[in-house]
Image (cartoon, rainbow, N blue to C red):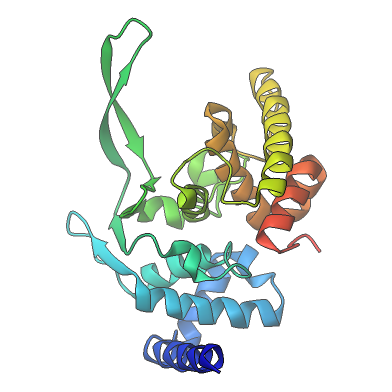
Length: 261
């Protein structure tokens, strides 16, 4: 009885949040037009995606940095893409943070790395997005807007900074950015075996100068390979299934989605 009452209360609360943050039809259609991989989903998927996006907007706080204005167009573009990976998993996967900081363009971050001799080296890194455990999550709007236009980011590989950074959020839900999201012990062993093998093959292809659907940036570390593989899985699923069938099957099982179908 208590469980049923709690479920009913939660449903009513979510329905109120969806109504308060309802996405206007014209803005929703503009978002689907701008990001065609969203529009290719079924009517049922799109209805649930729109509902989740409204809930997302009710739970997250957007902040513009450096004078950048986060209008409805920006917020909905981020929300719709961020909610795609958790379409079957639920928004609770994003409960670990609230703030999303939006910049107009890429951000230069000062980094430090210690070499094997204990010497610290400093360098600057340009960031289009960054996810940190506990938040906030940072995104550059110019990179978000360029996500579906290869000519704008200089590569034929899939590029989607929103899905990339939210894949990191999913990965870090257990406190570690290691390319292995929270899994049952039985699933974890299969996951690690599959992704490690796929990553090794991918790195060989990148080192050989082969063109890849998955962004070559994935060769940097297995956690980056996971994030760029998730990008390809949702943005170009048919090509991903053809080029990386083992990774496609792994991600389809985890996300409970088969977008290539």
